[in-house]
Amino acid sequence: MAKRIPHENVYARIVASKIHGVGVKAIRPIKKGTHIFRGDNTKMIWIKKSEVTDLPREIKKLYNDFCVKKSGWYGCPANFNLMTPAWYLNHSTTPNVAIDRKYDFYALRNIRTDEELTVDYSTYSEVGRRRLRD
Image 1 (tube, helix red, strand yellow):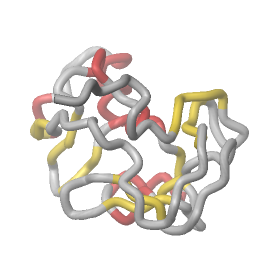
Image 2 (cartoon, rainbow, N blue to C red):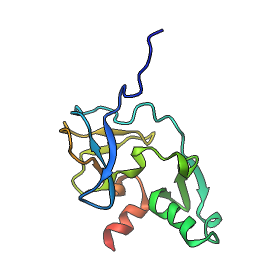
Image 3 (cartoon, rainbow, N blue to C red):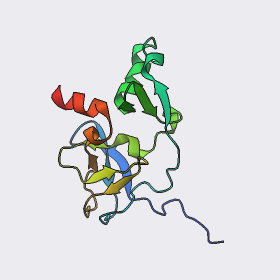
Image 4 (tube, one colour):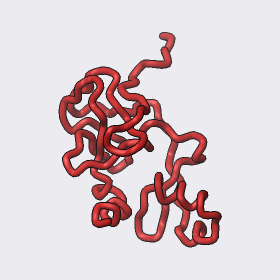
């Protein structure tokens, strides 16, 4: 069996963002259609929003800042300590990345090295639509 190396299929890393706080940038060219976070096989878990209501403010902020919001549910990482770069993509109304039905991110167009990766939150999360109006 061929030895796998840690940077195989790695296209991006977490960086300081010019858009907002922390973001993700390409560390090599990414061709249109490429699934960017291959190897990130951790499934989201779904938590009822009502289960988060009485949590301390800073814990609730984790859910509001990072989770997918759908019809009274939060789609969350299995554990917030295990968040991969995919959880740090910033929003854009002209994104270079999209998400498929399995919540896998792929390049909408060819992306250059050092370009920040962005996605339109409103295409998969209710909170994206609210944040855009704020």
